[in-house]
Image (cartoon, rainbow, N blue to C red; front, side, top):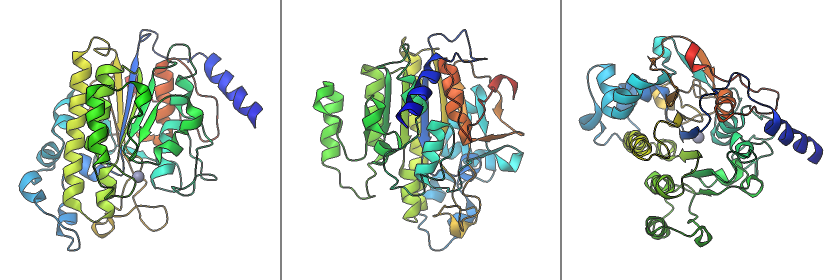
Length: 362
Ligand SMILES: [Zn+2]
């Protein structure tokens, strides 16, 4: 096994990436995910059918986010996505408009989806529960950290404690921070990180091993400002957890704030010469949720149709302004190969690995 891993590592580091963007020699990449955010809300805003579903508390969602047209509703929910990304990048997965994105794993829950996203293939043999333990598969983050160019410049933060396993932090060799774990003092903390640590220590674990996304976001922003990773993974989570709690109002609220986080990250990177015009973004999710209103709280291959359907967005350096696509099909296993390609290396071949997405020729 060790020999196979060593071989894979050498392959990944030595293989030049064919068709990669020669011009992007000094590229930074940021992969951002929101757990279990449905394509229906991304493209259609708040869903009337879910609002009407009696067992779900709807709170103030109608007042704040309801609009008559689909276009107005989605813009009310995710204004940065529909004002900026739709005009400057690519958004895929609007099934009502002929664009399809889905996972290739046959699980349709979180660990398998996040692992497929960062490793580039499904592993339905090993990852059959969220408690699968440390990932036996290697992520593009780990391979990036093995390259001369990106070594020591990879960082992964997430709201859900399970990211320690999904990323296999003991083996990975770069900083990972997730769940109710504060940033360690050894990192020499900034004043902002110290304050965020204090807030995290005083925050109850009301969702079960998932910290509030607002805290993950503060760590992300502080890392961008002071740690300057060239490869950053940010895994947000609350949309999924509030959905499981049957709280459409809070899930929608967190989706709206997720869109604000995207805006803040984008605007910060455009204000800092380290990132400005050198950074490319992919934003996506690990799985969908039930397509029927009464199944909206749930997801899973067995019994929840439509919950393998997802979406993805790309914007920033080198991404053409093609807007919301009306054709084509992509899969979550294409994300890691695409990011590796942009970073100038190829992932070692693996069964189930997706092809890099060529955004210039969609
Ligand atoms: Zn999930």
